[in-house]
Amino acid sequence: PLRGRVAAVDGGRVAINLGKRHGVKPGQAFNVLARGEPIELNGRVLGYKETRIARLTVTEVEDMLAWASAAE
Image (cartoon, rainbow, N blue to C red; front, side, top):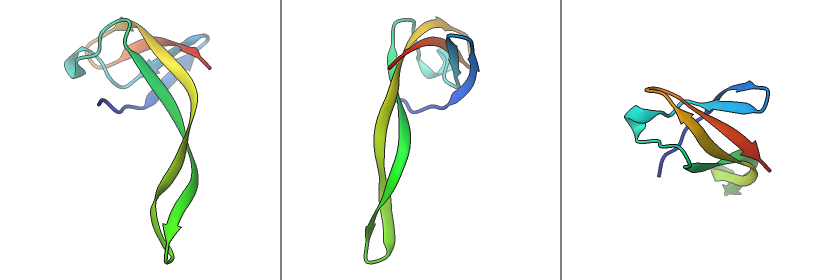
């Protein structure tokens, strides 16, 4: 699965740091996750709870980035 980051927000459009070079195509959807509380065992952080805060649908794709629209 592809993992990327939100690079910019321009009005209702969101740019992500994945593009044609990464195999992204129009219509592809991505979840936007927020890092929550840590999951610990014996004082060691094993990971974090993640919560979906939005879903992005790709509308335009360039070589190194893609533009998407967001829905909650």
